[in-house]
Image (tube, rainbow, N blue to C red; front, side):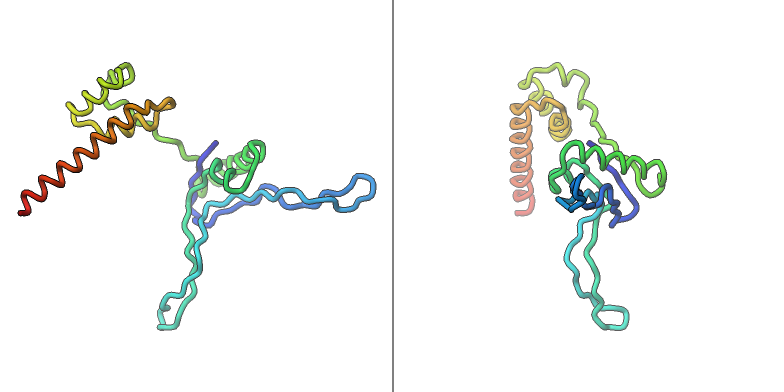
Length: 175
């Protein structure tokens, strides 16, 4: 399970072509291998824009620069073995062309305060309010391997209440 970045928005590399599968005795084509192509692009529709001479110029809406192999596996119906083959190919390109494609690492946020992980969920909510670290606590809790839903719900409610209070105060100062 890996993520990659690349300079090329339309980067793609074939991992396995749709080669024919032949019967071992007759040589007849009995099927085709599954084609595995990894892409770092989202291809939008083509649009016409005014060109430098005023004439319409057809351009493609392509954006990307990132590859999430887990998401592509879901989108393209790859097995875990096929996803691993794709990652092996991408790791090869990372070694061969490090200036063009590279491995991205997930950033892990530090705990918002030292005792966070050992605190009861009610203590987390109280401390987050008292220290004004509600957003930080929510971001940290959401990235944890075992997210505590009670804390998430409480912190989200606190953020919603804070937003309502800010809106109310803003309307008082405007009037």
